[in-house]
Image (cartoon, rainbow, N blue to C red; front, top):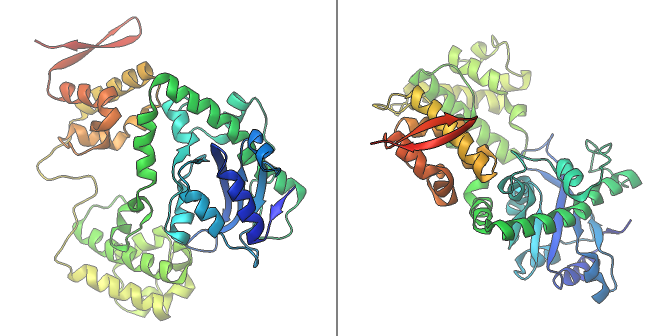
Length: 389
């Protein structure tokens, strides 16, 4: 199986890809020992008919670990707007390319998002689409392999190439379905989010928002915010996983016990030994002190002063969402999340569910339901919208 290890060979394939209507792309990477994903392999495929013009192969592996290879020809292909770049579940792949080269492939097509728009369910997996659309089975035996080791086995290479060869059939089917249903603009809205740099920027000062905790004391949250800020900055600067600094459960323990000295850190049940001294220990103690002294106390996550929750309206919105999603043949989660419905019930209006194609399918009626302008009626197992008044 062809594996590209030299820049000139990659350039040759990418020039051929520029003559094709689309190229399918996938990556293999490792992230267990680093903060940023380590790119280990790139898979590319073009329609077989396109190779007749070039005399080359239609699917290749690209080895980014090769010292004789620059990825600039691939990035040049990514900038080439006449060729669609097709991914499945593109977010992690795009994060890698954005971090490494500060670019996004354009134009972009994500088959996972397209499948949800076409009614294949929530977060539909590649294997499911291969089975349902390409009518094939995947060998997943190499799924959890170490992609940084060389040479790759034949099994690894076959597994990797399957991730882009079947993708051609899936793309052509979903692209046709979107044209048939007139939902290409729906996909474009979702792709715009994937192509927004904000999607991939992790700000240390916002890291605490992703930590799950049952404690909503503003002072506790202030300390948690400072601890999460330090951990994120430390991990990013040294390219190590967050868990190598300290895990979430240890951070929650620290925010509760409020250690002020290294001796206090020694009493922690959950803190790693390496974190009880040196730079990490100093960072923890400084963060705890900053949180204790902070006058900018965060509000508990999900709470909005003066906006009590409306559980009954939240339940009705869930019923409306299910009915609208079923009628449109779209995964409900693609239209609105559970937290968005709860926010809508409290009076929030700056929500994705109320914008673009989502407003057409669900948002407008959701606002009418919240305003008491419509009601819901069940008949014969179907939910109907009924005007009020």
